[in-house]
Length: 256
Image (cartoon, rainbow, N blue to C red):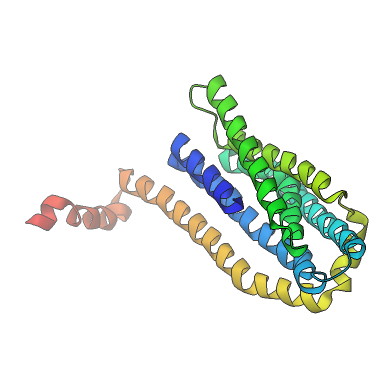
């Protein structure tokens, strides 16, 4: 259900915005994918490894600490994204700001899901994801009813995050506990044998892969912006070789 909700927001935005705006959203979403993976490695991993057979009282304390760790990480990354987005301006900046605003809710909802699995109660996770999906469907419907275009990427990201916040509140009721951010550092350092190894593995593998995707996209978009300007420039002799190459690549030349 969680993967379906994440895929749904990608499909919805892809159908309703142009390629430029979708590219800006894709940058923000890639950062989310990196951060939620880091949250799982650094926060929720010990639940399934060290607390799966613990008594409910100890498990509840661990769940609060896990959700608190997710909340702290989400808030920290969210502040950075908002500041960077505000500095960048433009479509990319707006999408980063929107993702920063909703990041804490996204990570806390994910933490409740993993806590449910660690406690052997997967139906709680399914129910929570259904709340998220229903909230997203209602929000998208309201946007579509109030706008001819159904809302841009930023509005849809905010709706997606608002639905995750609703599901996160439902998770509080499901687990009868609130996130405890004060225990975040103690939780991470107290399970270094798990969190340290898994965090390092995630950063070195998945983090490097996602970062390379962002770099490739940034370099490719930069080159794509430069090439039309060079070809269209009627300037002078320095651009003549470039024009000759483009002429040779024209379909009529190739067919001859």
